[in-house]
Length: 77
Image 1 (cartoon, rainbow, N blue to C red):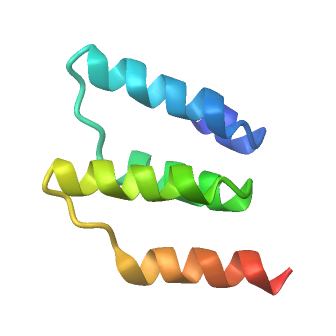
Image 2 (cartoon, rainbow, N blue to C red):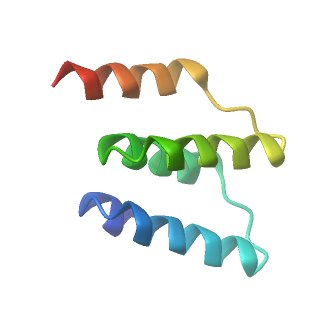
Image 3 (cartoon, rainbow, N blue to C red):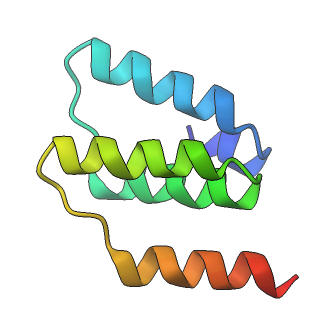
């Protein structure tokens, strides 16, 4: 997933996460953070929100300050 993130390939990274989840893996906070950051960086805001929703479904509240910082960095450029 990190490799796809470095290449700005949000959909491929999301596919890796989906496959991991479907095989019984439980994503950790760093995986979610990578996905949210990648989705914002590539302009996939709806997908970023879907990742945040998935976090909530798992009982892992999103770090709202971190997401805010990512958005601010994106809009700075």
